Length: 108
Image (cartoon, rainbow, N blue to C red; front, side):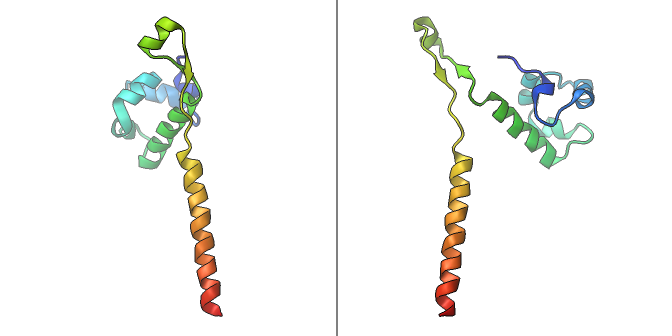
């Protein structure tokens, strides 16, 4: 499915028009240009530019994708979901719990 720039979280009509003025008039153009080209647009620093690319990835999550080999057999598979964020949050909680346990044991 082809997405429009305004489908990206945080990009409205005015921002899409500004991006188009800088040659970034499609999601494909944004991906091709990368973070550095997006940062050349006024109002896009490193944090906002990276946030746009995260939003693009989230936009593409869960879409049905096919490979050339599979399309002949009409087999489709879903795009893999990101589990890295979930794991890192769990790891942070485990690490925090370990730190708290160590603090408690030192107080005794």
